[in-house]
Image (tube, rainbow, N blue to C red):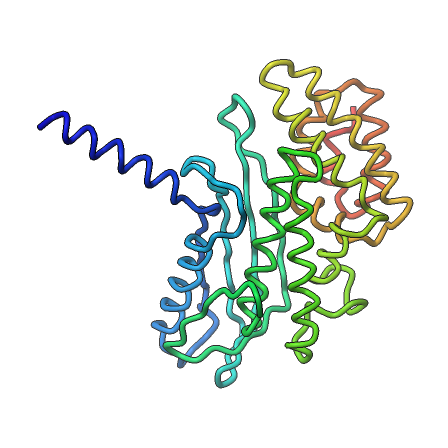
Length: 299
């Protein structure tokens, strides 16, 4: 009997590992600003979105349960007009650092122009072939971005396919949802289209090398050799300056500022005085409004 139980447990573990999808996502919908609308609508939508994120097969890579990407999607509803909802979306994801209990932020982004139509009781579905709902387009867009960043942090240019998928969604949504903000070129240097372009265009191509070196050769190395890992991170800053000189308005810098700046400063605060000064001068130029964060690099 004990042997039978052991076999059952073993098979369950294999199946649960084999069937694990890529995301360990948590969805939160904040409707505190909305009055006169049933809260059941938001509860149902929240459960629907979380199920889609966690049950969809987003990549061709097999993930063990422990390898799933921890991420969160917080949708804040600011206005409801009939079946049209508008608000903002905060997306974040993290990944573990090799041989450490620390997890590093991979994606932290706030989208302030989210608009979509939704009927009570409607079941949203992800369709890789076509985007039929602006909210699903937005959610799947950011899912591919965060997966791309995660893959990029483990392998050089490992996220390329997923950035391309995000750009494909952005292009499709330009045509399908022409009244909705966020998808149009030149509308903003911080919108979804600008973000997808930043990760796919040649002028910011050096970002992928920086991102890989920062994580795989920098952070992941620090458990074995703190000094060597920090040196690789220090070396990333002048490379970041190269991108800034080429395209200072790239959405890459918005994303990096929100996601990585505090961590970068924390790590560089232990560097040499010369390294700190050089890094401060570059980062101050890129982020002139972040003086309070960057002040830690001043001796």
